[in-house]
Length: 178
Image (cartoon, rainbow, N blue to C red; front, side, top):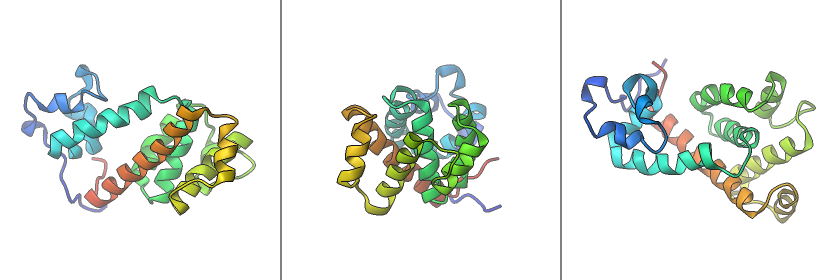
């Protein structure tokens, strides 16, 4: 196991303002060292940045126009692209709650396969294309326009980008579970 480059904020370092930085994502009763976990506790080393990012992330996780299933496929592909086992491990249970089977999750890891339906394959391919080309081709945009409206396509692009960013941070900071 590698050592974190940035240590999570220790419980004794929390002050009255620390839970406020988590408030965009965590309700008051969960804004504590135990429920915050390694990722959020590490981000708390920079409270204003954490608060700003969590407003954005809370939209993607809690208020997105995308279904939880589509969201989790995008997040898992972003974790794969960035080689971020931490995010993969934390989002597999969320993917299961969103209705993905273990076979489908395995297919998401590889980017395709018979376990995934046409929409899931399109979503995974869009995440791959955003990673590879930093944009979507006209063909992919048109294909996404059939099942998704404009706001959903915007949420799709921002979900991939936000989780690429988060995976980069997790990897660079050396965030590991306790």
